[in-house]
Length: 153
Image (cartoon, rainbow, N blue to C red; front, side):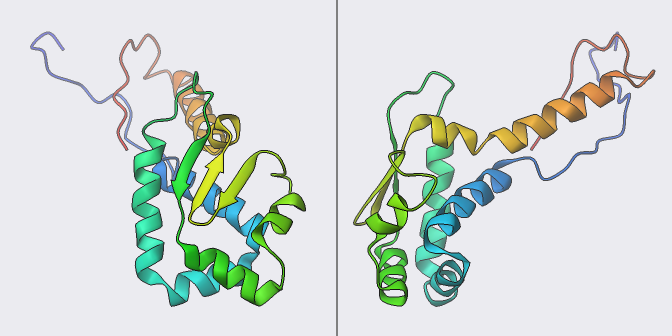
């Protein structure tokens, strides 16, 4: 506005397209390796460790860039692997080798090493939804010729 203020042209709306969704994508990768029952058991029986993992993910998500090539290392609670190996009778390496992540991730004790490309892919569902939403907004007659978008979340 002429006075330097902002004018809302379109009511705020959106979806679950932020960091929590990225976390879900990472958890889905873990579930593809160790299975949903083991993941649920781990979360239910190790609440503190699960919260530590959430904190770890918040940190790691801030450092990946489109240019990153180095593996991303996430500290993962040892109990998740122990639960898997006890319940399944196979090692975590065997599980990874039998998954779509073979050669792309490595699980060493309490560290999960993930190729940068795989880690970036965790963001794709979010970014694709954000881009689609902005494209739909740009078709709204109230928003045509807008030069600045204020996005939060």
